[in-house]
Length: 68
Image (tube, rainbow, N blue to C red; front, side, top):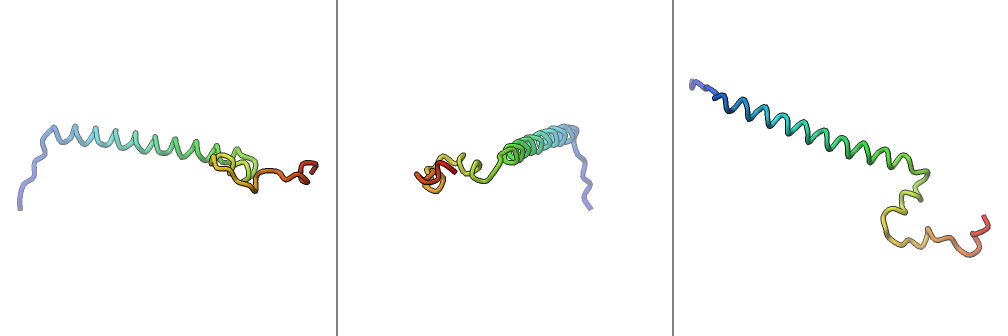
């Protein structure tokens, strides 16, 4: 059996790594939360499709549909 003695430096590094990991998880959670809120605030899927910056012919109203 080998004896394993950890230096004080290892404890400080572990604390810093834990802090950075928690900050990373908080940042990912914040971005995910903002994405969910923005997606849920849209009324319909048509509004969501407008944000992809691609011209879609099915989203352009036809001449006969303008009065509806």
